[in-house]
Amino acid sequence: MKRICVLGTGYVGLVTGTCFADLGNQVVCVDINEEKIAKLKQGIMPIYEPGLEEMVKRNAQAERLKFTTSYPEGVAEAEFVFIAVDTPSGVEGEADLRYVRAAATSLAEVMDHPLIIVNKSTVPIGTGDYVADVVRRHLNHQVPFSVVSNPEFLREGSAVHDFLNPDRVVLGSEDREAAEAVAQLYLPLRAPIIITDLRTAEMIKYASNAFLATRISFINEIATMCEALGADIKEVAIGMGYDKRIGHAYLDAGIGWGGSCFPKDVKALEYMASIHGCHPQLLRAVMDINRDQRRHVVQKLRTLLGSLNEKVIAVLGLSFKPNTDDMRNSPAVEIIHLLQNEGAIIKAYDPVAMENARRILDDVTLCGDAYQAAEGADALVIATEWNEFKQLDLPHLKEVMRQPIVVDGRNIYEPEVMRKLGFTYRGMGRGY
Ligand code: NAD
Image 1 (spheres, rainbow, N blue to C red):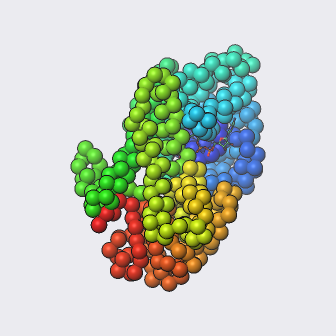
Image 2 (spheres, helix red, strand yellow):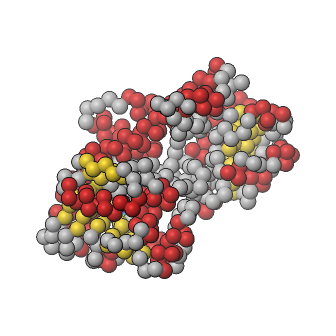
Image 3 (cartoon, rainbow, N blue to C red):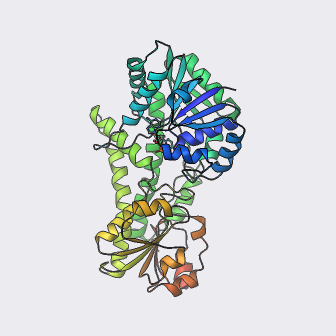
């Protein structure tokens, strides 16, 4: 049993803290958001994540997991302090480190015993050293500490599973002993553990996300070619994926990647590279292709409907991917804005992101289910591949729509089947 404090109780911090508690450690999660902490103390989850609520409740009841807004309370007994605060995009695309700086400062001010600071937030290369500097400058008690980088690779929607079943654990530090101490926390997971230096660990995270985004943009570029040349991207991807050197993952063509990580991390890496004299042309193309995928949806609708002014468009799915309520950089939201700019009237539905949608979206009629959204619509766009959209009652859907036009941004239906049912159907990269 180790004593762990986690700073930042969002998607990563809450999952990290809860899973470490479930592994038998004593965990205190600290957040500056009082509302979030008050809710968590009552067992109310601030986010939707499969399996999380039950695990939080079980560990809170066993008194292994506590929530507080107080740094002194969180840090008092900790041997390890994880930083898991947000690192959003700044104006130039750089990672904004204000929350990391604030967390490191508040931590330093209350540290009165030696501990290991573990950075889990995705941060620019060199931030480990920066955190060490910030802490050193703000210490009130001259106590020794080490900084370890431990980037997180979990995916929203399967975060608990991913945390407990990682493909690898990456640790970077100039203090090998500290990295090995952090490695001990992960031993029960039986995952490969890579110990390297701070900067290399930080780069592994950016390089991994940039590579995954590149795969998706690559397949989307091929999808656009398929559409022009009469091939079917779904079968192309399957045919490619069986090649062991390629594999099947991250080869789904569609409206592109979004969410709280890929957009900001690819931008941040591009920014980092540029200001250090590199020419990250591939990353720029990866972002351009992704942006164009949203535009392709609007173009398809314009080709089918003519002017979009006053056309009613139903959008199914608002979260950036299924099994999460996270709408940060959601392709659905970007497409809705593009359609609204052309005068379209938007009706929308998402299985779990409606509360967030109410806060984020203006002038959108939020509906109780897919059929309500489709009622009277001139076209329907599938923006998120939630399971419940995969088996819609298609004849009923067609009946309630004003025009049976479907743009399937996630390729969940088969063009042939949809055409036979009388829909005018467009997928992404399905050119036959
Ligand atoms: P989030 O926005 O969901 O949560 C961040 C939390 O930190 C918020 O609750 C916020 O109130 C809190 N916070 C901000 N400043 C604080 C401070 N000074 N002290 C204490 N708490 C503070 O963010 P997230 O999605 O969990 O991401 C956190 C980091 O992990 C980011 O760097 C992100 O890039 C990285 N990451 C995210 C994911 C993901 O899927 N969300 C996956 C891997 C890595």
